[in-house]
Amino acid sequence: MVEQQAAVLSPETLIDEFKKNGVTHIITIPDSETNYLYELMLKQDWLDVVPVSREGEGPSTALGLNVAGKTPVVLVQNTGMLESGDSIRGMALDAGFPLVMVVGYRGWTRRGKTPDTAAVYTEPFLHAMGLNYYFVERNSDAPRISEAFSEAQETRRPVVVLIGDEYHGWNR
Amino acid sequence: MIDAKDVFEAFARHRGDAIVTTSGTVGRHWQDVSDNESRDVSLGSSMGQTTSAAFGLALGLPEEKVVLFDSEGALLMNLGVLASVAGKAPRNFYHFLLDNECYATTGGQPVPNGTGINYAGVAENIGYASAHHFDNLEDLVNNLEAIMGSSGPVFVSIKIKPEVENLPVGMRKRTRRRGRAETIDALQAELGIS
Image (cartoon, rainbow over all chains, first blue to last red; front, side, top):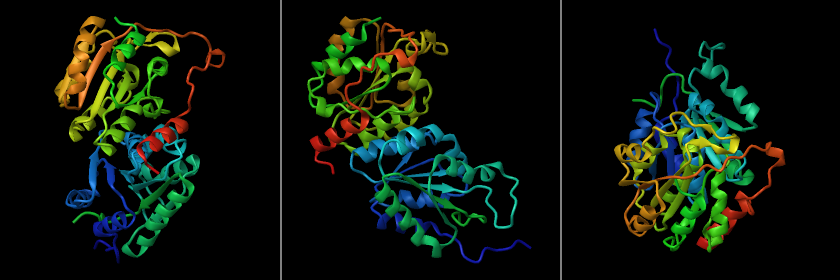
């Protein structure tokens, strides 16, 4: 029998947090765990979804939007975050703008070791880059998302929201 | 092939109020030509990513023309951005590519298939509203007014002469007169963005 997660992080919670924090653009590459969120984002008339071709485009596209006075969010999976290393360095950390990156924690498990190296290297990568992060797993964690926005604004640095969603709660 | 400085001088006559950003070392010539420094912005710091930043700027400022002078070495590192641009199709985005077929700043080594790539063909087939290619100055000069008057995203590939640098980086003369933060602050002040 498959163990069911007691509470999940619903896509609607993410949308509410984006709206509450004045997000104008979501720069993203869809992944298998965010499909319903993607569809829901497209339905929001206050939100512009910007699909890109590789994740490294995220921080740089966000920089341009930030210069234009907008509030972008980068939504990618941890594999894509790893791919984005130099873009995070040059276009986010060095640029001096607030940026929230919502990162799907593929391979994360609450039961100890994971065989997925995407998960194995996620937090060491964040530490190496000096990126602070907030772990979010269920709807009750939503205030941490707003905390991430506040911290990004105060520090004018990128801050990561790590979505630990072991049972694909973002999908329906 | 055309001198990069001649490209910039020809473009300057049709710039109007466009915001201009450049990628690659050849872009340094623009600062000697521009007569509207407050609308010149430096966005780059990661090779290949200036294109995406200029794309984001165009999306965020739909009422302003945004012009990027890109380089082919940088674009090849992030070629998928052409699809990203075509997908959102910002009508105010003018994407010029200065193609010298080599990595001039590292000694002139050729980029992969440097002489064989039809960049304008790639841009056109990936979905830019229009794409152009020029390898002589007269043709470029005769078409710039129409290009800048057309609706984007527009792609303009221009063959330029390489300006190869071989000195070790630490011995090179710094040519950029303003840093990225300074240019962004000036642009935001110009546009009333706080």
